[in-house]
Length: 193
View (cartoon, rainbow, N blue to C red):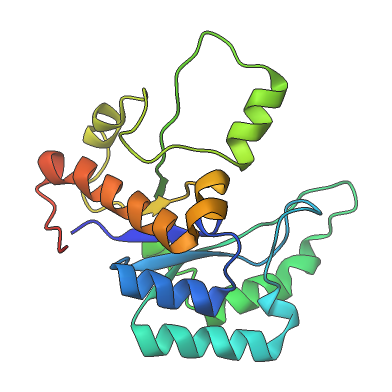
């Protein structure tokens, strides 16, 4: 079965232990954790700077059997120094996020296809409102058909309006079910409801 990972942007309001428990409750296999903030307005959970939070996250992984698919985010700015990533990478290693067999994976979401987008529309779509796999216009089935069947899939689908209205749990659940529906006919995925 293709491993499915709950990515940070799908539930950005959840700290890693909470996200891990939600992923386990809903039937995800893995999680993607954002340790470094991308912008001043987006959360990041700096486990590499907080030993207690790192221990709590490790405990949640051990308790649930969920594994870490990936860690994010490194920003390459003019001030960037490679050595500054060492604590980030060490935290990833402690969470077992970097084994070679997990490096390749696919982020899966959907979007409307339009002739053109304004910069404002692109920024909004890129950070706030994506669509569940199979919900819009991208030919995801054709893309998936070209990829290895066991390639891990990370569901990174921010839906801020629905999350604000109904909560992150509902967003994560709907995103997972949409991906399972998309994968089932093409790959014969076993889906446990």
